[in-house]
View 1 (tube, helix red, strand yellow):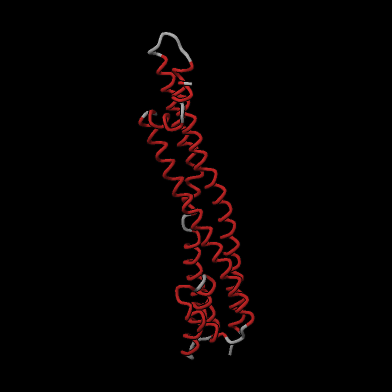
View 2 (tube, one colour):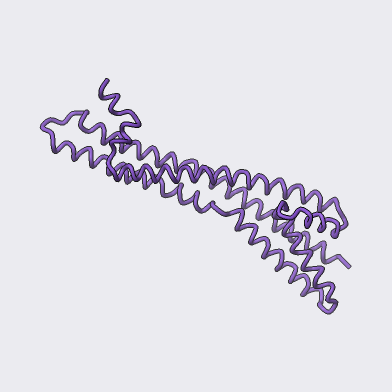
Length: 224
């Protein structure tokens, strides 16, 4: 009963070596941050997908581009990524058309560049924090393994001070080593799953934006 009590989770953490405590604290910190980014990206990606679908429906249902443009401008900061790409492209197109001395090829090239620049900014925003999740997923198991190795070393070092080795002498060191491994996996697994999921979703959004830019360019080419 005393051995079971001594190996409780809290007791092991309190009596672990300083280096293992630092490893556990680091893993706990990155795990909390990764969960924060996981939920943040979940809402961000879901909102981007919904906004893109809604805007595509409005774009193809509305033949008046000026009216749609004004609606996007009225949305302000609430506008979605595809709406901002549309706004950047149409603004550049109208500005060059008003000059009157620019040929259509140059107008379309400049319009595409404006949309591409906005597209890149939107993609940078959507991809933010994904690299952190990838880093946590790849590095955390090794950080936990480092704590595991150190805990096992402490367990074997404690045997040098006793005449007869028993489970009671090595159990605390083995316990803190296994906890470090578990914390490394607890931090890594959700981060890897979330990274793969959101990277796929962001990739699909990127393809959707690129398709829209091509279709919108075709629409603009037919404008008087």
